[in-house]
Image (tube, rainbow, N blue to C red; front, side, top):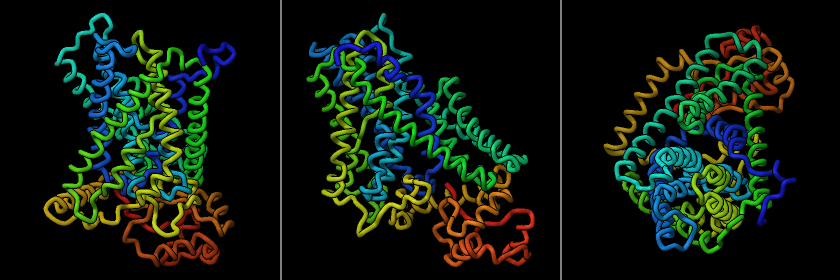
Length: 508
């Protein structure tokens, strides 16, 4: 543990490999399989935790870390506060890999609202932390350690520009890809469809990074746009194949991330480790998370109805499950300055402690605070193993919270968006008002497997049950009885190898 072994050099954690190979499939799959309606239903607390909370945590941890340097207790540059802010930003990254792997376990039966909040925060928080880290690093200068007040405001302005720019890049490339798929005949070539979709994802990530924006934030919103529009432009074969490929890649990358994290213990990452300093920094993380979870939740609850407020027991769990992981460790590997090795060791200790210890007692915490699903509810893993979708159930009090002036404003904005989406965007980019394109071969295979139901997006909350039943009968064993007749149910489309699933009204 005191020095790296040359024979293990290939097993050392490589930040470039992590950010450009392992992380993109995980983030894109999270956005592509996201329950958009439920994510945006809780967007206010998610944005507060991910953006405001990360900034608050960064400055609290950075300030306390700088105080360690002032007292001469640990290897921290007391003359350069930007070094402490860099560490504060990287250690504030709540890792989605660790969070989804632990909180998304079907055995935990995690409360749907709790998982929705934790999932949304972890996905956006790591992007915010990376943007903050890169922004502060631009202003880090070991030769000029004096930090002026204007530098902090410049850094925060740069952070806002990068965040907005990243979202714009992801949205525009998502619309571009959807437009190309919509107005071409790529659906006739399923292999080409899947390959181009994969390349579009990496184009989004690479373009954002080349523009010095956040590739993770751009890729996440790119996945949301592609799922909302482009999934209806794909052939049946490409639709199923793409989901399974992305899910498989995400699982493999998550496994490799944890593998590299564990091997880092044996490749010299604990050189110069000070256990006391690590424990202090761990305490700073706990304090910083408490300083933004409880106040921000109090503010969010002021805008929610009594039945929809985030209870105090859930706030305690939110405070507890701030797991750190590979993103924080990868950023520590890019830490500048003479104290880099010390920050790497402290970060690895915090990552291992929060993942192993805190993650290990998560089930007891959920049980103690009553944050499990009531009754014998289990998590359905049959839908392609998509734990993100099955857990992100809407808040049962969402409709109740739409009363009052704020609710009417929200309904007005949502209604305006639905009209614009249906009238202008979906006709040009693809959407739920149209049939998904299906290949004849894939349809025949599906008709021959009567017990198989194709993975599908979430049905609208008010969809008629009889319509869903009729669709299942037509696409399952009942599909054989339709033949090639051109009845009112659209069976005549089968002559061209097409059939119509029920119209779905899912919007953001």
